[in-house]
Image (cartoon, rainbow, N blue to C red; front, top):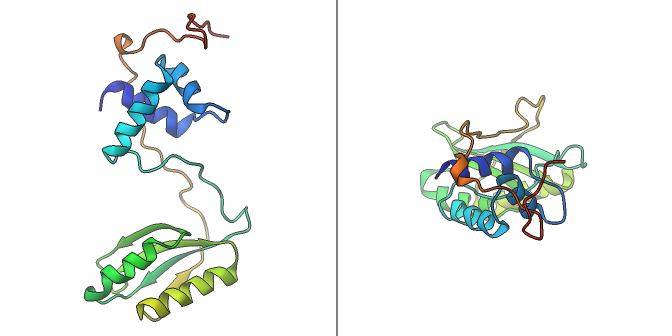
Length: 171
């Protein structure tokens, strides 16, 4: 990963443009072509650096229900349970812990009823009873960014151009 990749990652996390051609706008900020931005993003995805690009929405403000869930899963049934959890559309995180409750995940659903129904079906399908759910009492962390301090070297950043290839001027 070079300095330009790091600068690209900073832009994607902090200043993603909300417009019809966002990757073209990112390219203009970086002084490279849109194709180069897309190539770099694809490469960073292939390397596992980028998992996804998308909006982070406040599910509660949208009227959704969410819970932190915990389950005691016997070691021999972890693959089955984790596999079922991972395919649920409302799961945002799923991880193992060295604890009596060894599998923890977050689940978001359009309503309380759907959330409870999902937990009930998960329990029935896996045989894991008493999946505990916890409501958030307070939000401590609402955003995570992994920023890089290095700006791209000057020689890697050619001057920005407008859509016709002419040097662009700052407005």
